[in-house]
Image 1: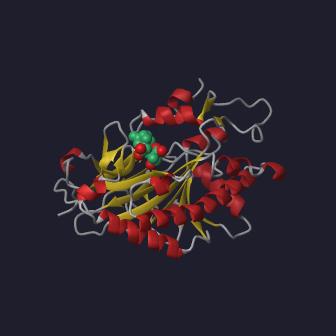
Image 2: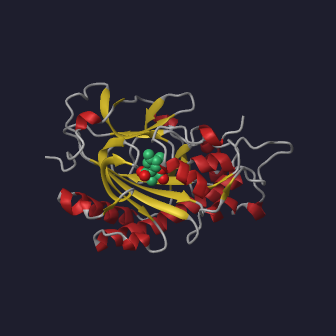
Image 3: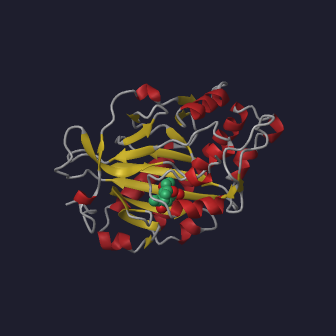
Length: 326
Ligand code: GA4
């Protein structure tokens, strides 16, 4: 019996079409290669999503986290619920606070100011999460610097994006998603059960790592959904809505979703770091990027304002819509 069958029944979770082929649609960037800045910017202008190799995060950190997270998810449901503090902490099948459901259970935490430490999770899991997040934050920072470089920002201003997600002030989150195989009689052939419904991430940048089990799909600019081949040795970077605004639409946030593993498959486990700025940070196109006479596509807002609006929305909503200028 799968531990996450209560209280939402599997029939309440929407089905999703399985995507096919086009593995090459996901760009890959070697962070140690001389052309990394251009490759990162190309990927962000195109798909808004890319695979990162030579990222420097020791496999041992991710393995330790995966092992401890798996041990946590194997606990009885009532024990896991003790770590629930919606929308943060442990959650099962219910995503956010506005009725979204998926075939998964997760841990969602705010990072920094000791909040990972404060969460009522086993101490060894907290420690692994903290260590892993510290390492992945560095990758996020490096990628943000490459983005600025690839966008043509002058050398003395290249830290502009990276500084927005610097610890202390930044609003960072970490999420561990566990998708057990789904025993759903309705899901057959072309259709699977939604693990995590389609959405874009509201933050600036997200950095994902998963185990060997697939299920993640991204939407290409032409509207096609393609599967992302799992690769535990790589990290995957998402452009978030805030980065789309900061670049005045040069980079596009990527729609993505997860199809839960079918019965008989193994569980998918993913860990995502979300780099958001300080609450008071103004989210507006970077002056360093704007061409003469170029106008912002968005009205000005702060991260606190956008986050508040995002948390009132449904997963699949076009969250930037109300902020777009005619
Ligand atoms: C999507 C990205 C992150 O996972 C997240 C999610 C958040 C949540 O799970 O509570 C949201 C979702 C995410 C966007 C819209 C709102 C808020 C669920 C939801 C329906 C932690 C985040 O920051 O935004």
